[in-house]
Structure formats: C-alpha cells, structure tokens
Amino acid sequence: MNEPMPHASAQSGQPDDAEHITPAEPISRRQLILAGGLAGGLVGLSGCAAPALVRDARAADVPRFGLGVASGGPLTDRLVLWTRLTGPNLPAHVQVNWELAHDEAFTDIAARGVEVAESDWAHSVHAEPRGLAPGRWYWYRFSALGQRSTPARTRTAPAAGVTAPLRYAITSCQRWDHGHYAAWRHLAAEQPDVVVFLGDYIYEYGQVPGRVRLHDGGPTRTLDQYRARYAQYKSDPALQSAHAAAPWLITWDDHEVDNDYVGLQGQNLQPDFATQRAAAYQAWWEHMPVARSLRPVGPDARIVGRYDWGDLARFILADCRQHRSPQACNKPGRGGSSVVRERDCAELRDPTRSFLGLEQEAWLARQWSAEHRWNLLAQSTLMTRFATRDKGRVGEPDMVWTDGWEGYPLARQRLLQTVADRQVPGCVVLGGDVHASYIADLKPDWKNDRTPVVATEFCGTSITSNGWSYDKFAATLPDHPHIRYGRGDDHGYLAFDVTAKRMTVQVRSVDDVQKADSGIHTAASFVVEAGRAGAVRA
Image 1 (cartoon, rainbow, N blue to C red):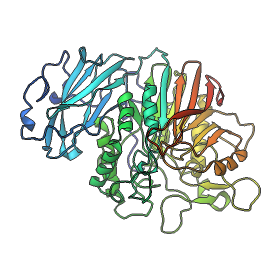
Image 2: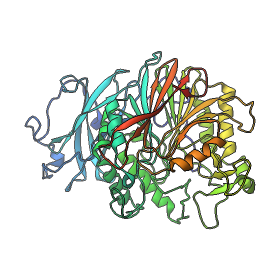
Image 3: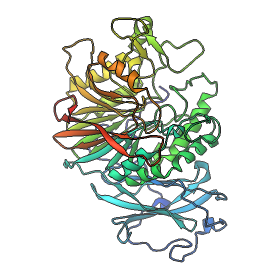
Image 4: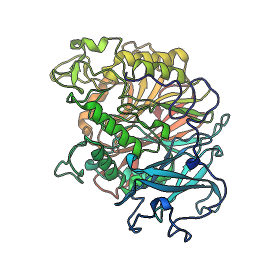
C-alpha cells in the first residue's frame, strides 16, 4: 500500500476505539458558523451589494449553480454541504454564503456561514456545519455572485442509544452513454435517509458513436478532462435531484480513474499513471460532498470511514482500489484483469496478496461493532463465490475473474473468518461494479458444506451500465446455490428498510434504461432477520 491506514476514520473523524467524535480540523474565521436568521444577501437577494471579493464578476444571468448541490457524511452533529460554481469569468476566489434551516422556507435558520471557492479546486465548496441536532432533517442552500442555488434536503444521524429505523439505497455504475438516469429520478422520489454510492460515478472513456447519448470529448487523462467529465455527468437533472433528496455516503471504484487500475498501476501500465491518478483523485474530491480533510495530496487520498446510525447500524466504507495487490496472472505487458483457470494461477493462492491492503484489513477488523444490530460494509464489488465454466468442459466451474474478490480468495477468507470469529451481528456486505443484482450467502469456506453462513451480500446492479444478457446470467446460477437471486440485464438500485428486527430489501428496476421518463418496478423483495445471516424471499 502507498500510505499507512489512518489511526482515525478519515470521514468520521472518530478514532477506532473512541466513544466521541472530535473535529477533523479547527474552524477558521471564514468558516465560522453564525447562529440566527439571514442577515443579508447578495445582488438580487434582499438588494445588498455583492462581496468586494467578486465585484468584478459580470453576467449575473449565467447559471452559477449549474451542477446542483449535494450533502454527505451525516454524523449526529455535523455533515458536509457541497456545490461547485459554474460559468465563465469566475475570479480566482469567490465568496460563497450557505444557510442551513429547519424548514424549507428558510424562516428558521439553524446555521449559516461563508466559504471561499478557489479556482485551484475548481471553485468547489465543502462547507461543514457543526453543532447540529441529531436525527433530524434540514434544508440548505448557497448564495454567490447574485444568485441563489435551489434548496435541498439533508439530515443528521440519530444519537447513540437510539434505534430509529433507517431507509437507504445502494447505487453504482452510471455510465453516461449507456442510458438515461430515470433510476435517479425514482430514487429521489422515495426520499431515503441516505444514499450509498459504491463506485464508478464517471467513466473515463471517449465517445462511442451510436450510443443513446455521447460523452463529451475523448478519454479522460488530465485534470481538466476529469473536471469536464464530472461536469457533464452532474449536469443531469435526475442525478441532481438524487443529490438534493438526501445525504450520500460515497466510495469509489476503478472508472473514476482508469479501468481495472490498482494502486499505482494502470491497465496499460502507463509510465505516468501517478500523475493521472493524482488528477483523477483531485477531480473526485472537487465534485463529491466529502470533508475538506479528505482533500488528496498528490496521487494519495483517504476515503475510508465509519458512520453510525444510532445503535441500529454502522456503515463502514472501504477503499478497494488504492491499496490492493495487483491482479493475479496478468498477461505480459498488461495490467488490469483477466479470466483465468484457478488451478493454472498459483498467484491466487498467495496469502500475502490483499484486496484492501494489509493495513486496511487490520483497520476494518477494528471497525466491526458488537453494539450495533447491523454492520454494513460498503465496498465496491461482488464478494461471493462466482466462477464460470470453460467452454466444452464439465465438472466444477473454475474460471474466475481476477479483478473481483474471487481473484483474492485468501483475503476474502480472512475477512469472513474475522466476521465468524467475532460473531459480528447483522453483517451485510454491500457492493456494485458488476452491473448485475446478486443476493447471496457469505461464508469463509465455500468448499466445506458444513461451514455456516456468516454474512449476507447485496450487490446492486448499475444505474445504466450494460451487463450480461438474461440467458447468459441465468445459465450460471445453477452452479451457485448460495446465490439467492441474480440478474444481469436490469438497471436501477436496491432499496433497504431497516429496523432492529429485520432488513427488507427491494430490487428496484427501471422499465427501459434508454428512456429518461421510464417507469420502475420492484423485481424482487428479500428479508434478512436480525441474528440470522442469509436472505429469504419476502
């Protein structure tokens, strides 16, 4: 791994064994949160003058909040509010006011403050109001350059000792040119408490003729190209509505940088990959509602963290790209992944190889909670056993994809054995990446029928990205009885309703990913009972 795993959770600011959350960094004067009502505004807002900092800006009719607003990282007393200023002729530094209110009309202001949007960071804003009440909804908005953003909803997490219900959704893989974002529109309408995004927010590829809509420009490699790609994705109104509906918890996968990259190794073994990764990580931070403390340093960034939902659930966010060992048995001169026969690839059985990096493995082992009813591991891909048959061969399927957990079987075994040894309550693994819905049992040793199931996996399908055909996917399921549900031709998200007694999950699938106004339906429903690993049909 390229850097030590932090002793504190980078996103929560909470040490591994501490009971209380401490601020990640002191609040400067310009970030000071002022209690009380709105004292004034900008040009066009209560008739007050624009800040002297930006008095040379013109064209007030140019949309300055064209990429919407977002929030994330909900804790009991704080969260992150995000926006990015848009349009031409932006000064190097722009003063941006923000407000957080108890009501949509903003008559009861809970907090307000000022940030400075800097050109070095794409004029992005990461405001961090603190001292908020636990377990309640708020409304927020931004003001700058004589304009005001649309208002949006967010909320804090319940306090310790509370077992309030939790409604969340998991999503991933929203390739722009594979379809429209109808799934986001429906998810926003369902008003979850939290959205968990598990990677592939953008795709780095250039234009492909004939798609339902096209990427702007060629492949992304530079900072300006990554920024432009995020701006294109975030221009979609359905995606903006999903960000405005609830706070997000976010991790990444490969396409935020380069297909199938690991560590400082790109798929094509690019000699300048560290520079590319640094640009990609910076653009990711600039466009995500994550804390200022997560701002990357060169090609390195910290995104791991844990988020407690009262005493009901703990979310643990993992990084599956930055610290892991390279894929096994690569072809000469190539990085990335391949499909190999297990018996022909000795690297698969190397105990030193790690999917998370050995330091992150140790960090994760310290995050499992015996006090919470549910432990929710948010990571980027499929964990359960999944192999295919080579053409014309009989016997057990043994062709494995080296980029997923199947390519790191001993690392997976270590993780699940820890869950078993610790008797981690309500362990649920959340994943994406594979453009298919999987609901599966997890156990440390699939070759031993007597090994008990220790966790449940919900791997959600893509928002838009293409997957296997129905027939191809269905043909694999008889070889995998531990997979309770699988489908590769759907698009949408998984919606969760969680109480102290059970977790109910709906597979929400859009009717036609090629239509922006597509309807949606529930393809299947499952229940996991507290204290009993494994999902059953509802």
